[in-house]
Length: 254
Image 1: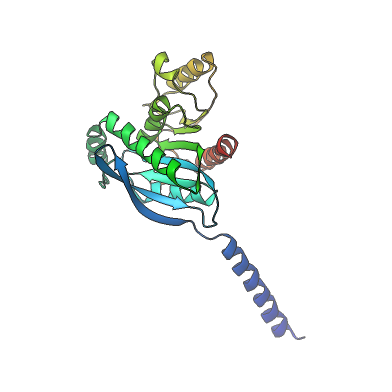
Image 2: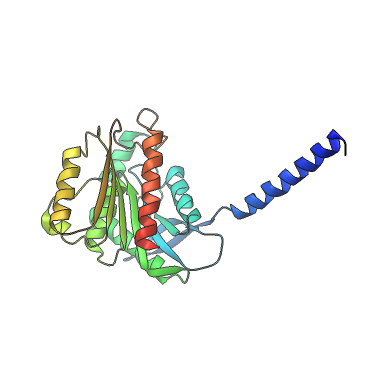
């Protein structure tokens, strides 16, 4: 067999291997969904593992920007790891592109409505045949991280909560209501949620015998996991936070 034939054979074999890997790494199924929230209707972005089965569920809670493409990417990534992931649209279709607009949208979101919408997302997931009803968690970033914790306060059946640089409750009576294990990822240089805030929350949680695992990343500020934050993105810290998140969710929901 001459060199050209060998090369063609090698390329063909490589192509078959690549094709096989591509089949294994199929992207999750995604769709826009709507479900009732009180007397209103709320929308969401749903990502489901491609392979039929029954999976844990995750409520994905967006940053102050709204349900944008980055949040949808995280939702798909979670589905790719074996979760039925639902990103709830707390802004009712609005998405901000600059900080002032995001600030106004966040200020315009009543917390009770946000909690009601998250509960509606929880009920939607729990009612699905492909979701394990006792294995539903929450995850959020920035504003969404704080709301993920607020939902844990209000929903005792929540099985896991991941907060990424979100605001932390300080009232021990509220913290006492958090029954779900909590994972937290924070930046040491965050001026809004400071290391002192994180340590105080962790101390209160541990004093109440609650399960908590927090990490504060040196050299990282707020929103260090989002590459759209061009000046504050810290890829190594973001990769580590994602690795911690997957391990935590596997242990809590798997």
